[in-house]
Length: 405
Image (cartoon, one colour):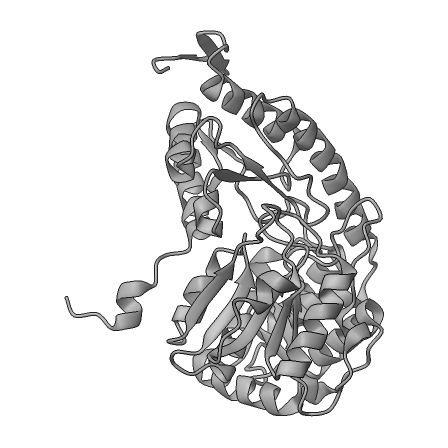
């Protein structure tokens, strides 16, 4: 079969494949536990459901503008004012089918073949392939100090004449680390000085724990003109537990947003008007759903971190936001894909290999599910890899016997 260069070099989404694997095993009646998930288990906000139901009952479900409806843009403007203390215009807003599409359309609007895009590691699994889809070159940057927090030196020594953009994701997926305000200030100032696009992937910025300070990139911007190359990405998927609604957005200068809208118009003709109605309901509705989710996640995090720290040989930097831990299991197995597959095969626990995020030896373990899944999942993992574990483990009425060292 003859495939394009992009078709041959872009792989499937590891996290989406994992969700598919979970669904298949669950349907077969397997006692599988999903600790690799990227979506909260909370119900979507009632305001979102009533809003979408009201419009559906009207029967007027038509095309929406390619860049978003007037009311959806008003909701995003309100969200931006409340979250970033910055008022933007409708011409600065593009509504997309999820934050992922907003990032993808932004990259398509700014990148030429052979351009380079820098992003710190560990990174969200889609960044490298999204850059490749534009014919450009991903440049992951691993912090020299062995932590998950980059420094400006880490970034600047990877900048070349081909560098076009930098992507920053804080709170970070998969590590849960929140980048310090001084770093955000420096990266904003550096990007402005060098004329680089700076894409701030802020999809988790409502989910920060224990009073950790979260920097507002707008606080450090000097150029608010139409020459600004700052792009803010956000959406309703994580903080409002609305992953399946697929509504995200980008904030940028009006010329860039127009180009992104043109591209998106040819790709999808715009985002579903029904799903935009739901997002409007969530953003304009009662916000205690976000605080409630954050409280639940904080409690889940404490349970998971406590259990992981009880493992001999597992090293963990405690997450400050999002809903993932990114623990170093290399004392047990340096090949993270091998370890992840082993845990799925032997004890039916799904985790995401660190290699997919640019950090070998680690596993991304999520705490966005229930406490029961966390407790049982970690119990199974410990039994599978700890050589001092008993020879047998019961999962319900199923008895597992260790047949490995």
